[in-house]
Length: 312
Ligand SMILES: Nc1ncnc2c1ncn2[C@@H]1O[C@H](COP(=O)(O)OP(=O)(O)O)[C@@H](O)[C@H]1O
Ligand SMILES: [Mg+2]
Image (cartoon, rainbow, N blue to C red; front, side, top):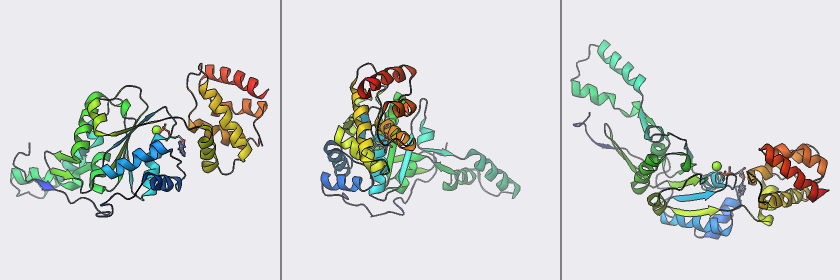
């Protein structure tokens, strides 16, 4: 279909064209400061690989346990550089048509009908051509990012998608262009900054990894996690923040927990305790708010016992 149609290259890059022709930061330290200004506290390893991804125009692949700030890193990058954040949430069975583009079939049919009703003196080829017009093109996140770039494209939880989808993404990430058979080629004038995240429920392909700069995000150390709580929840008193982080770090390192709490749980728990009016962490308030920390019955029991030993 559409073999004889003209090839068009879309003008891309609006409305930010030319805004980001060179690396927008000069060093990892500078990037770290910009991220911090949005409330995201990256350690040296992450800010270094982030800086390199920007400077080398390569996708950034972040792996780590849930709740270690992978998604938040992409959000912080977009905010720091005032770029649009375009997000593709991956799931099992996701297909290229959900990631790239689709044709608005209903609108195409309506268009056909109205041409027919108008007595249509178009030739068959002209009619077909008019069906594959930009106004019938539904841009999904990846295409949108190529059109709008400079932008941050977040491909979230890629490990949920299947193998074929990964292969397809690799192609897009290698060329930053997409060809639509009926329409033409869309190429980003500036490559978007791509952040891929994975919770590592399965291993990704070497080919995809080779394309990216890789970083494993660990749970933060004590001092940085306290700082994260203080930054994200300035209303929580310093003493409570520190006690919560100490307790979470101890729980995290114990071996018999099904789902070790991430930074997300630390933040939730600190907020819950504060909402319950606890000036500091005691056994009663910890027991009352444990649902913010543990999401498995077995963990709730084990953590309650551990907290009793810690606080009792
Ligand atoms: N380094 C960090 N600085 C500030 N906030 C963080 C940091 N790491 C995690 N968070 C916060 O923890 C929560 C969970 O992070 P998220 O990005 O959703 O985790 P992931 O995507 O790795 O599962 C978010 O509210 C996020 O803002
Ligand atoms: Mg996430």
